[in-house]
Image 1 (cartoon, rainbow, N blue to C red):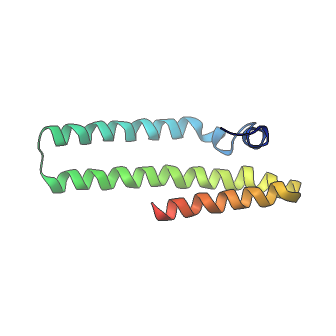
Image 2: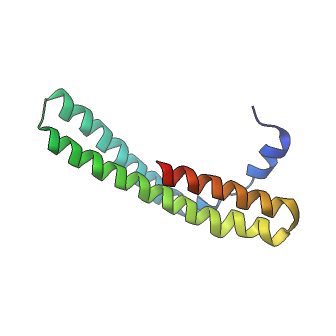
Image 3: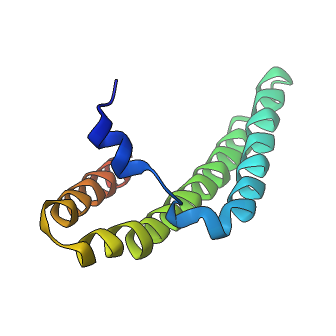
Length: 105
């Protein structure tokens, strides 16, 4: 459960909002790839073909993640840093933690 300060920090238009339709289109395509992978396993297709499709899906997800991260950095983090104080430092820590998660995945 989040507290009211956390909710306030996430309120308002997010950095990706101008690219929302493109992100949704890409995520729907990834969703289709996941269904395709299920079908490949159900149809007992060749392992390497399945792994190739998993690699393509992983790359597509990474691309979405990097785009969202870029939007977050150029919108949310820049705005928080410009306002100064703890809010800017908190947004930088938040972004660093997100980057670390992406690198580990």
